[in-house]
Amino acid sequence: MIIIIDAQANQEERATLLAMVEQAAGHRRPVAATCIGENEVIAIDHATLDAQMLEAIRRQPAVAQVLTLNTPYQLVSRHFKASPTRILVGDPRYCEPVTIGGEQATPVIMAGPCAVESREQLLETARAVKEAGATVLRGGAFKPRTSPYQFQGLGLEGLQLLAEAREETGLPIITEVMEPEMVEVVADYADILQIGARNMQNFPLLQAVGRRGRGKPVMLKRGLSATIDEWLLAAEYIVAAGNPQVILCERGVRSFDPQTRNLLDLACVPLLHELTHLPVIVDPSHATGRRELVPTMARAGIAAGAEGLILEVHPDPNSALCDGRQSITPAELRTIVYETRLMVQIMHGADRLSQVA
Ligand code: PEP
Ligand code: MN
Image (cartoon, rainbow, N blue to C red; front, side, top):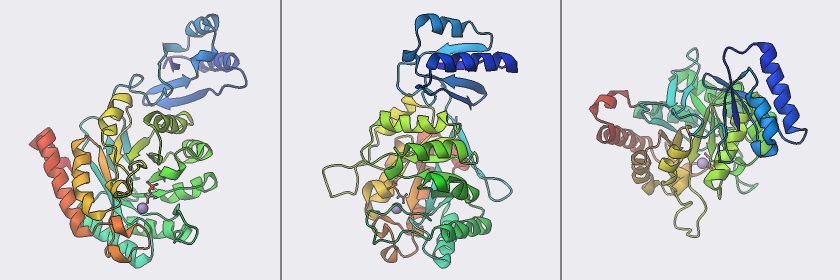
């Protein structure tokens, strides 16, 4: 259940309402009080409230509207907020800001190496992806690797190199945060906090980026075997904790067939647009695991209506310390950017072409 607070309500009326909802919920049921767009809201599982209590809450002067949704997720639901959420990325003092999602969205292209490997590798890639038309630089400083013997990322040094690349190119940066304790440190550098597939249901981490992510947008990757509802509930954790700026990233799910690294679920893109107001972007690199499939699946992602792409790019993919097999070259990225522009033209008409990255 979502209670929308009347913008005219005074402090006392608001406090009375919140206290009443908290009392009704009891100690065992969390109550989320946060802001979504212009609305201040309180979200709670209404199954725990009896009819009399519900009626008393409805009559409170601070209540503008009470919505009872029959989905497990609430604040991320399109039934709660019909207009698509527009996410603002980057501080204009340090980079060229970009918007992701919203009405009339034009796809964002995020690109860069899987992992920050060295100053030379990152700066060379950053310059090349900018030149190719990307508007956000990706790069992992903290890497969640399957084997403890694989390259684990440069850590703090990687964050500093990303900041240097942003300063030189003006590209906002996206990088992964793996632990709740590191959220503030990563948020000091990143313009978008990435939650990796392996951490999609790391609930303390989701709450940490919601509460302590310095207001930075979060890109939540789909878990390796997560259902859409589980994914949306993971997004709900972040929003309920106080951060409404969440981007969903489809990066493929585990399938029975090892020919591709994962199975890219493109139907989830239009489905998510029905279920949620959050923007959705597609990661054809992790979804396929094969660089030769990336350009085609990038086009397919845009055709499915994604608000953007995230792509792994390396100047010399065969020597990459991480995910080289799926990394494309800057020249291939340039073609994808060009094709994205054509796709947008086909889908939305020439008037939007000039706005594409
Ligand atoms: C990545 O983006 O490099 C990454 C580790 O992705 P995922 O969490 O989707 O596997
Ligand atoms: Mn990777």
